[in-house]
Length: 338
Image 1 (cartoon, rainbow, N blue to C red):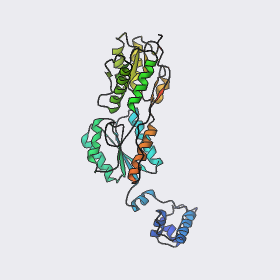
Image 2 (image 1 turned 90 degrees about the vertical axis):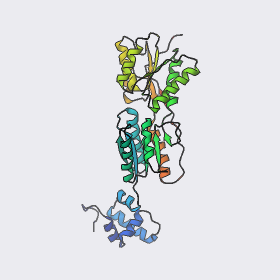
Image 3 (image 1 turned 90 degrees about the horizontal axis):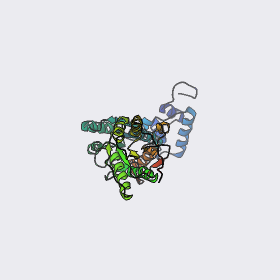
C-alpha cells in the first residue's frame, strides 16, 4: 500500500485497501454517487486525504459513460480574428472544466469538414464549436446528428442556428461615424473578401452609416484581409485626389494601405485619415498608431461556451446576444477644418 512520501502514485486500489472497502465503493464516492453510507464515505475521504490520491479525470469520464470533451472545428488560417477566437474558446472550455480537441480544416474542403466532424464524434465529444467565417464552413451542420449541441462563431447573423460573435455591423458604423464626425465628406472602404460573413456585415454597417448621413457612397475596394491587398488598394486610392478618409476592413489591410499611400507621398493622418478593425496588438506601434475597432473575443467565447455547456448538461441556456465592439482612438485620424 502506498503512503505519503512514497514515489509511486497512489491508486484507487490503495485507497480501497486503506479504507477497507471495495474499489467500486471508492469509485462511487469519487463520482458523487449518493448510494453510499455516510460513515463509509467519510472513511474513503480520509483515506484519499492520507494517501494524496488524485482521481484520473479520463477514468472518471469513462466511468460515467462519456468524455468531458468539447470539439472545435477551425480553419487552418492564421488570420488574427479566427486564431484569437480559437484560443479564446479553448481557454473558456478549460475554465468550465472541459477538455478541448481541435480539428483544423480547409473551409472549402467539404469532405475534410465532414471527416473532421466524424473524427470528433468518434472521440465522443459532448458538443462542437465551429468557427464558421465563410458559407462553405456551414457544411459542418450537415454532418451532425439532429439535435447535437452545436454553436457557431462568426457565422451568418441571419441563421437560425445558435451563433455567437461580435456585432460587425455596429463596429463598421462606429468606424465610419468616427471619420464623419472628424469632418470628412465621405468615407471609402477597403473591404474583406466577398464570401466572408464579417466582411459583408462591415460593408453593410459602412454603407448604412453613409446613407443615414446623406453622404455619397463610394464603390468598395475588395481585399483579402492581407496587408498586400491593402497595399494594392492604396495604390488605387492614391490616384484619387478627393479621398480623405478610409475605413479598412481589418488592421492588416490598414497597414498595407498606410505604406502604399506613404510611398505616393500621401501622409496619414494629415492627408488621409484611416480606421482599421480588430485592434491587433501591433496597432499601437503602426506609424501612425492606428485608430481601430476592438473585438472582445474572450467575451464571445465565454458566451458561446456557456450556451453550449448548458445544452450539453441539459439545463436552461443563456441568450447569445452579439458582443458590442468598441472604438479605440489613436493617431491615424485627423479633423478636417470647416
